[in-house]
Image (cartoon, rainbow, N blue to C red; front, side, top):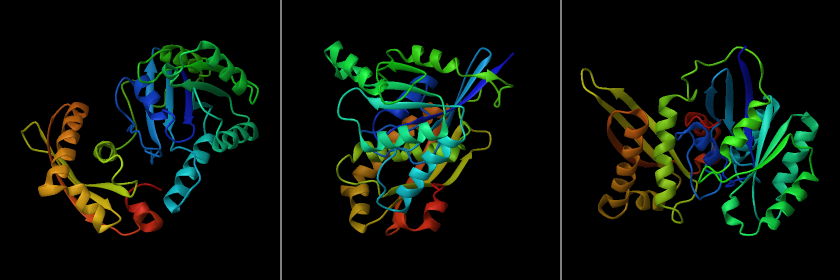
Length: 295
């Protein structure tokens, strides 16, 4: 008999939720950056091994919202928790427990949803006693189904984490074909790959007022070439200049790195063209948030 479980990956910004999902999937499904609140959309990853299928939702980091986009991101977290069979709660191995983490634990208690705790970035801890203290501290706050210390960057204990999640699967037909990796449209994945390069290359210069819209995505007839046309939107004219760079140098670098990832992901040669436009204060304009597919 086949088994399935829908699992929401939740936690505060920048704790490694997307990195864990990508490591489980064995490929890049969700974008990763050192900047917090990188994930905006609910990226669904589908992991099938034998008779068991785990369907993951990688939610945005739970945080104090500063605009309408932030509010919608937090709403996405709440919606995800309310409609799954279990949650994978990701925290860091060091630091104080955050206010948002206490709030998420309260949500788990109210919804009575099974929760597995993943303590990520254990490579940052030199003393095992420190890790044990962290486990005891968190275990006192909630009755977790399991607690698994992991390192998403190296893959340490990721297999053990998957084994624990498999235990939560129930008898059910698989909801997706066994070779499915994600339910996200190709245009969404392409836009996210481009946005990741902007966040990585412009780490301190341009904040999160960036959105990417794929205007065209089509494979050429009788040629193994995928044409992609993308518009990068920013909130200020000054940011537009930064994204383009001196004589177009930054935009060229963004496009080159994005094209390499796109070719790797889609398995085909990619002709990527990018433009930069300004949409002032788009993160507080619901129509634009909807147009960018972020609601």
